[in-house]
Image 1 (cartoon, rainbow, N blue to C red):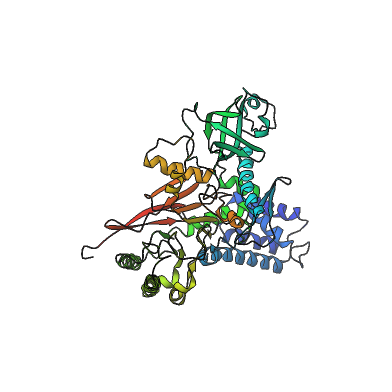
Image 2: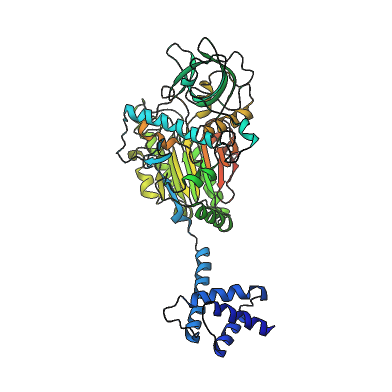
Length: 541
């Protein structure tokens, strides 16, 4: 067997035009013995050594024992460094809180069929052109996803399936073709006469819902894009027989096409890098957690004791989270038109929270705190995306909590390969108030699924018209959900839920102060999953 192994060693080095002396052959056999290389792996192992030997500047045709020894030691060092690198994985260097106003704007180019970076400076006021661009981007992003869907994209090979493909039409193709059936993709809106229409880049057509039995899943609101199938009539209306949400594209599919584009402004990564990072997070950071709390009413006398109890439990159980996201509202009632004393109390409540956090050194040393303003909180602007909390209210938090971030609403958290979107808005009530056409006959659980489906299918956090939900048109891209994030936190005063749709995990932590208990959610990056947590109130409180 030793002779057979020697023949393999000589054959591999001969492939690289090298010859072996007795001393070098003996050294290679010793290396194989010391590392307990199986017979089946001898050739591949010697191949690695021979390849590295021939990369050396002083390599000779007759293998030098000194150079061979150096190559072997170098390979051992590389292996040790790789092991040490895996052990020294640092979550701190891969954790970013991304401001909505710092995200680069990528507009869709129909001519090039890809995204182009917008280089001009963005403003809070926006322009009429930016409003048009924002809506056109939403349509084009959804449309290119629809056209890639298997039900719309033809195969390159001739087959019978081509006959079953659905073809999208434009509103301008309806003219003069009464009695024919069409499938349109467009935005649901109201005409000047108050009639419900579907509008695309070429025009609009009035919709007739009288023959529609049941709409597809989801919430169809004014401002959302829908796939509508119906018959065009002599009256110039479209009799709807089916309406549905556009299909959602998984994150992996979008990343495989546009992985080179840095949508977040923190450096683009490839799918291979993402998969490697995902494995490392799953294997090496299995006990790492993020906490998400919403409606942390600091003016409620029960809130700070509840937070104190949460911190104490973390310290006692050595279960200290890497990230705690506190979403507004930080007051139970609006102070925008309040008295000076109300404003002073608002600041004092944040000061008290700063002192509470600072009293737990184990938490302040390792935990990042993120504050996301709610609809009732005091910020520079009141429309989406919202600026962070005013710095004049949070001076003590900045001074006493070293790892504090005052984020926009919405904001994004990039952690290794994962992207987590955080939005604090009472979205369920707003969407239900503005459902158009046929209202869904659904229970509460169905409504939660419909809301999640609608948000993700629309690739947008707030698929409503500007008269319903005003947005800063220059920063509408910060509300975009394309490529699909890893997770979305829809912090809402509505009931708590968690839903995973097309690989995206969506959850609502619910209001922190509620009833006789306090509720929040924990998120485990290693599992891409959330858990509901309940903190019972002490009897003496």
